[in-house]
Image (cartoon, rainbow, N blue to C red; front, side, top):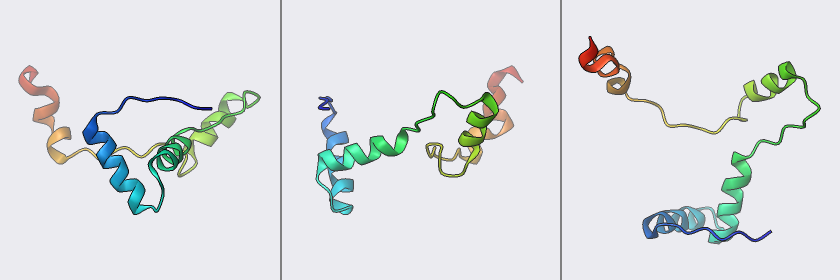
Length: 81
């Protein structure tokens, strides 16, 4: 399947650097990144089985960690006290 995506020039440049570092061309690298973000879950799984799949290490997308400032009490409650 072919998909066309409009990227900002700086995003394209960043992806190209990462692709080159992995020894891939840009379309191959983008396909790899997208495939790693998709978790196929068969519809025949029960809710508890689906939850178990999600809890397995490596199946969820990696999110950046929050800084101490982002999670301290003052920044959470701000002016609300």
